[in-house]
Image 1 (cartoon, one colour):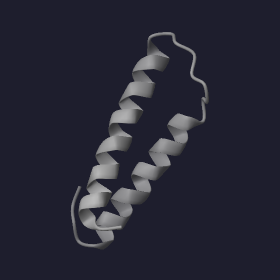
Image 2 (image 1 turned 60 degrees about the vertical axis):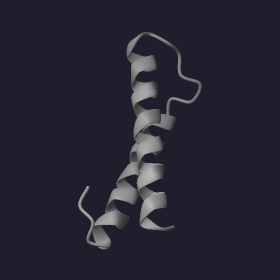
Image 3 (image 1 turned 180 degrees about the horizontal axis):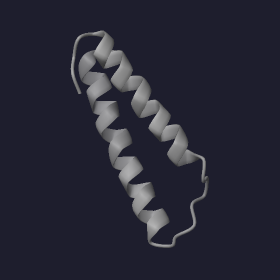
Length: 57
């Protein structure tokens, strides 16, 4: 995955995380409660990979 693809995916995941957190806080029921945790882990993986390339996020 290129740096641009990683940054694009990171942005998408952060927006999805924001959407899910907003839904959960407003009292809505999540289809998969573990999805927030999985997205957070994916974000961490991408940030780690970018850090290995010397790119600060």
